[in-house]
Amino acid sequence: MAVTPEEIYRTAYLARLKIEEDKIPEYAQNLNNLLKLAASMNDVDTHNIDPMSHPLEGQVQRFRLDNVSESNQRELFLENAPLTEGGLFLVPAVIE
Image 1: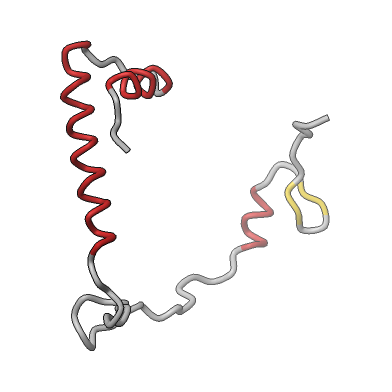
Image 2: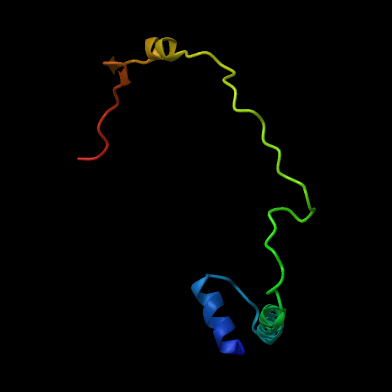
């Protein structure tokens, strides 16, 4: 399915993009080339290829340990709040 200059113009209008009239055919051609490239990837035979979580075999993503690095300061924070009740911050209602 080829992208027409009219579709480029309409898409630019909907996206509120300002595109010069003389550039629209160039954009249409570039987008058509990109769509052809994406369609050509469907022709690649991947039936005997195993999915990989990392491009280098045997590599895994290293995560840092989930260690607590700060103490609980809840009471200190509640002391600084203008209004609290039952351990909760009280704020004005914003939705009626």
